[in-house]
Image (cartoon, rainbow, N blue to C red; front, side):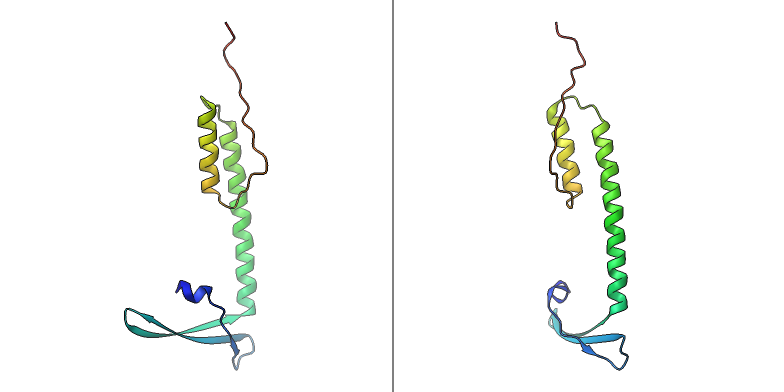
Length: 110
């Protein structure tokens, strides 16, 4: 299935001008299969709209999470770096341009 998604398929128009299709042969467990893939411009537009909406939701969630981890006072710099690293692992689409850890001493010297 993943090979099918990655391949460049050549679609042929159908009798209904809104759709085009492609037949693909494959093997799974020594069983020959034939897949019929159907595509339409309406589907592409709907998928792009859904994708854009999901990106927007993920970005809002990432901003909210970043605000939450930024509001925490960490015991040490290593804890702050660890929290930021976990944030980046959870949000792989976020690429930091500049990050800075500010140290605040709560105890007076002496």
